[in-house]
Image (cartoon, rainbow, N blue to C red; front, side):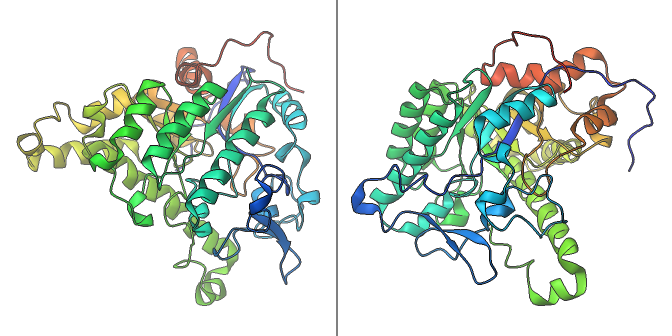
Length: 401
């Protein structure tokens, strides 16, 4: 469904982009891990198709390096840069990223990984818990260093060794002291053989996140991200690679919708009333249906009688503690803000990934928000993110370069 037409002139206002990624340099781990792990560290190698790709332990080689940085690439996905050197400079260089941000009047960007997966799950392939933890810490230290040219404009999101709750709590505390603003955690731990979100096993992690006021991100693809059910030879033949990618990507969005439902019924939000959870890259158009469905099933299932600690309805927990992000959507921000708490919606671009906004960032913003009330526009584009990530006010007026 198309967004309502608008004749409103584009507005130049500062934006906070709550989901971007860094294309990690080849020496990230080899330069930071102790010498004893040099041969076991995640590394880049050339595959038989001429693409550089990361190899992490016994995991099958993960996405080629260039597939994490297709913004502006000359050919449509799944074609991509074949080497790190061909990736756009702004995908991996902080100074170039700042120039790119200035060109779009983006004041701040949240920073997420690629190599370790969108919930650190790839590190499970290393099998050695000490090495797995060391890799998480190496990535988090890299992130701090990468953000150092402009710590007021970058929002580091700490990875966790989620397979070890005690180590995760220590890493939260360590990263909070280093300036990290959020926590990356899988919204689907059961897909990695771990307890479900509602299990008290995770209580120390929630407690630490709440104590340090660090939002917990459920980024798409942090569960089962193999795509094996989609990327089959039969599907590629009959749907084409673009069609398969569309199915896979949309499926990931909807997986996160299920994770929102999970956290709403888990009781976690009731136990930790100041905990914040963010569904990253999954969109917002489904939120009205999701909340209506959750409230309806909450009532007819008599959940409150079974779970007396859940004193609020799911939609009320969402409004109090859960956030969602949009990027390409036009209809939802233009038409559904009366059905979604406007204080709970954040804007992102997913730069520089294959589905990211690139070359059309401001056009997409204005297509969705061109007729929005000024205070709604400010909340979605800046104020909500500034509040939850403690981003200070810009020190200059925005401009588009």
